[in-house]
Image (cartoon, rainbow, N blue to C red; front, side, top):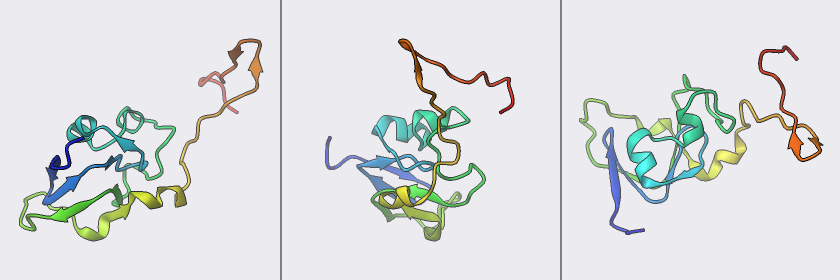
Amino acid sequence: MNDDLYVDYKGWRFRAPFFCMRCGAEVDVLQWAFCRSCGACDCGKSPTARLYITDRRLFAGAHELINPNDSHFLEADRFIDAAEASKYPVLDPPKMFPPDGEHFVLPDPRLKE
């Protein structure tokens, strides 16, 4: 990846590697440029998310202030170092059951546990 590659977002310049802002997983620059999250967190009920969608905090990699007057500016205290993502528990981890032959038996989402 080109070391000069960056994405400007809400008053900050982010550089590679790029991280999902909800779970801290590393993501491709094109994915990050469009939604700032990994595919799982972008699609709704994520099995990897560590922060609620309503949480003001966000995981972030390398970033630098470029425009504090941006109309959508994010305050610096909202950022959590992506390297610390493992300190936050996964909110809704995937539930795996023992294999049944060659297939995994997944729970029926319509049934209550």
